Length: 135
Image (cartoon, rainbow, N blue to C red; front, side, top):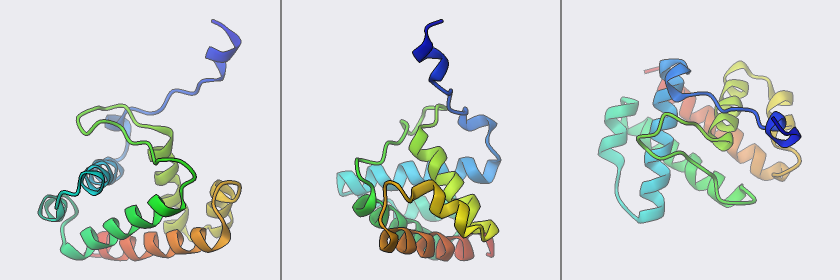
């Protein structure tokens, strides 16, 4: 095994994630694909997320992240169990928001996203979490 192969960290299989996190990744993939193709995915997201409010708030995150991310946010294929580094970063962002660990959240993003964009994404994730986890 070469040096570069040793540096590559395998991404977790979506089937090994907590069910709630896997649902969020699948919903995120659906929302991003729909956003890119101009399709309306709200009814399908409502089924996955449990409410129109959670759907709307996830779509706001997708929009905010789309503007703030320095490159295109990379997602896995909808049917693929493989996750991407961006998807795992998103889960880590969500975990930090849910636990109120703002320092850890900022540390994840401070080198690639400016303060105001980080603030907006943090607030958007917080609003999503309120509507998704407290239904």
